[in-house]
Image (cartoon, rainbow, N blue to C red; front, top):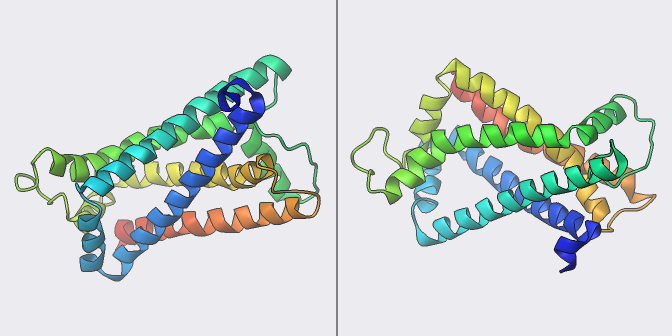
Length: 228
């Protein structure tokens, strides 16, 4: 199958799974912002996305996307290091002169696997703090034997970000995600053939704006619960 056997196919899998995960992050960030407006509204969303069959199916699908993305990232990185010694899985060879932005792009491009590893470690922490204590606890029947309640997402945010060590770790995690999706967005678009001489810089700009807005939404929630 060409999605497995060919280098282009593996890059397509990376691109499609990466864009799907960016869409999920956008949804997750938008959902979290509700916590700034209404605790009741946020908990209603958490209850709707609790241990229901559709939420469980979505969680399994999301986990599959993450595993595919990470496995293919390692596969492509090792393949490219073997073939060229230094290149990443990114297919871009365009050089621009956007100063700081260009330096950031080059750094992100050459450190995508490292950023991915940091993101995975942060994800494990996040799964423990929220998914394990909420959906998993509810699935295992602990909904009435623990405090806060698994459906009280607002209380879990308060409890998690009342601890400075978690605040620092989440800040590092969010910064790594920003670098990763900022570069990964336009790289995926280019791999899928939706870029060109005119749209290359435009997609970079769109990726920068999109990733910044998404991560800022997460940051605002984090800072609000950490400081107020």
